[in-house]
Length: 196
Image (cartoon, rainbow, N blue to C red):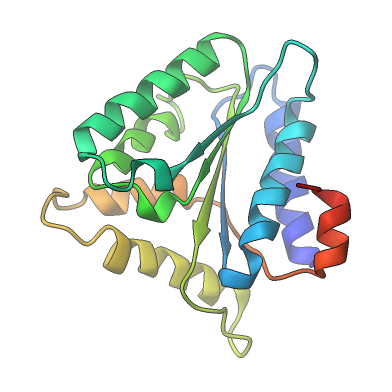
């Protein structure tokens, strides 16, 4: 919808027009079950626009499902190494799919990567996808649905005694700074845009 394109255009241009960028560009794509493919497709297409691919470039896609059963510290170390190596090699966009299934407390890694002034890499973009177990409420404003996504992460996904007090709020302020609500799309259209 128009709101999605406006968010992507406004935040994307602000990031790309700053030379050098002052902070990383961070999006959180949230979608119910019938929109998961849309979230993945749009993340890949947006990554290609932000950092156009070439023969020597690759796209880093980290799927949280791979780490679901890992110990949090082990997952955090591996993710940190992947991102660091990727960005140090001059690549600009990483996609983190299924953020909601990463083991506690590995998502805290993104606190520093998505920070404003103190991020280790500022000229990069990180796109998170969150697969929701419910549909958006059509009777409330998009802002309220965006807050519902944050509440889901804070009160269900990251509700664990392993997280220190205030850690989840600080993490949310960074990874969920720009929430993009995505819905299902016609499968035939989606297949043309993002063929498997």
